[in-house]
Length: 436
Ligand SMILES: [Cu+2]
Image (cartoon, rainbow, N blue to C red; front, side, top):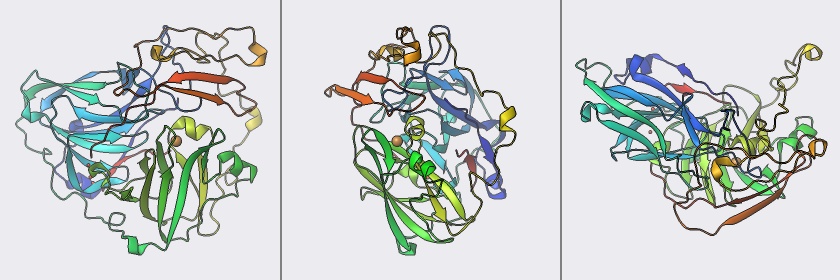
């Protein structure tokens, strides 16, 4: 399920802005999880499509309340879900400001009523609670974007309870100009030397990028690459998802990029800042522009749906010539002395080898041969049914997993695809950096 944290990077520009700082600058790491009746985490990847839990944890707490003062607050949002995308809005329908994207402050703030937030994206938003009365409650809601499995508990993220008025006017503004550094955001199409197509596609049960998987990279002794831009080159990459019932959060390492357009339309308002993860929805082609600077060497690009990524939707590109070998430059030492990283529990109630996630359907996971006698466990979890916002035919997904030493089972899942919805929009020098 991974660990998630935030490093906050400040610079003089950001510290000089009158935006909320200190106690009014609050990290929010949130995501969905699934638990059994004993509170153990559960995991099932739904035929390698993804993991969709029914409990929303915010900084480790399910659906918390936060007392806020009547002033502006800045929230550093990180979606740490394995597979879930959110469409965030305030319960009263009010506008909030987006001031920062993955790579730092946007040039100008963007005022939105809602915004899509996919896995690993970082945004900083400012909510003005001075508009509300003491005691008033404001909920951060989630209207689910396409291709999620929803539960009737996943429509709410957390709640704010407004407290006393504050008289100190410092760090309580949203300036019109946030970031004069236009290194990334100043790039123009005409700066690009090369345009490359990167196709994110499921082929024969494998998650691939231009037909490649990370297994292919490993089998090439880490020499296989999808691109080799020269150091300092500007390139446009067309990130394409031909469809199939899923979206891909595409994450490019090393550089920040600017989103040029999505199927020819301008980027959403909240995407108008330096980024390194971008939503590529069904049947979408998203064009991004970037300069390959600072380092030579091999860097990764992958889908940030961790289930897609772990089933090999990851490739690498080489910038310039040479550079440190990411695999061999500093090999792990004394491996022979290391114990196992973790021990897989024998207890079927806790193993996550099969469950009924949120009551969303029946998942039958025949056990691996060695444990053939053990029936698939039935586990009660919090939450209830899958809820669909628009009637669509049920889709039966039947996936034969790739035979690997570790996973030798077949999963059959009935699930409904998510309803189509339009997502709304948003725009910042420093930020919450948290690449993986
Ligand atoms: Cu993906």
